[in-house]
Image (cartoon, rainbow, N blue to C red; front, side, top):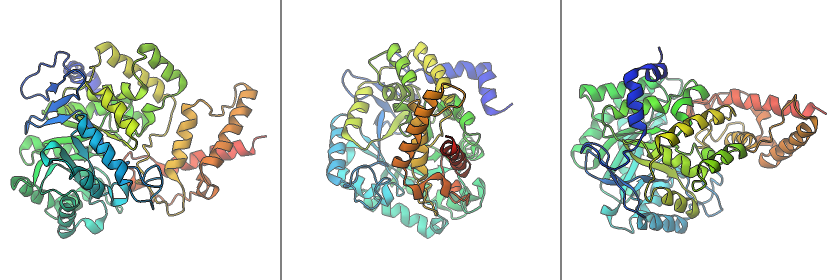
Length: 466
């Protein structure tokens, strides 16, 4: 029996899942739990049982910061970050109760930590919590010297002498032809860096030590086993959780793990969870008309984004939910959703999980446009191709053979014209040669060459059809 079947069919786990998913409605919990501090009109705060930190349920993900040319560094990599805009958003966030800021040496073309440090240093250090990562993905940074230097640079860029929440970044991935265990050992064990980070925590330079998970579930299980054995203590763990990934992450991509399993493993150990991708890179904020209509019928007060954020923030052991926000209006909407959190009822939970099946059956590509696959050696705009394909699915304009011919012709023209406008011809799917350079970089573990070539065949068939 696989992990998901075990959880779904175990009576104990089934009972636990109901408890784990549902936030305590009266905000009274055991002292060891991540308690809500919910005051009308104010940001919901959760208590870190390790430190007593009162952490905002909404965390500011600093990976999609605005740039001066417009958009983000992913869209305009040569444009500097718009520091004035970042300062304005950070000021608004702090003024409205958001105090958890998550960054990384890898974000925003390597400029996120500097920008975050500039914005936060204008405020009292005790008014916010900084989360950053040891993002030593490239083997050139695996040495003890280079990994230590990366951590020291983070302190310098963030203008602080301690990190509140330090993560081993994206454990479970692979690099340079090595399997996930070899990669993990190369990044953190063979060089003694994990033990060195524990020493830094003992010295007070790190207050909470954890990891973010993408990839091989064996590595996730191994690290939790170490926690059980007392080999290493994890103060928190960052996982991907949303109502689609709760039961369908593995269905969408066999190399991913359902959030139901990940969360249950943390909850039974009392390890606080920090949530990433609550909106799946924005996919859950932009629903097809039929799905959006069902959401409005259920409760018109909540946008698709708000439904997704409520689900992600609902489980009792969730400490903070990260949202990568580029524009002030997105920040304002997310602040409203969690000021305070209106817990989901059991009926709403089950309704969202049923709705996830409808979304899953649309068969969109699980790309979150994180851009880790870029640049492509052959110039493809991989995230752009996937984003356009998913957009057409969401908007219901995918040309379908076998239905109404007039509708097919209309959708065929709309798809092809839009594709040529959205993606430059020299960066379209037909330029993929299957070099597999992108495979090891995708945290969602998508078969990128396979999906790109599938889209190319689809586009080619549309172009050849009269």
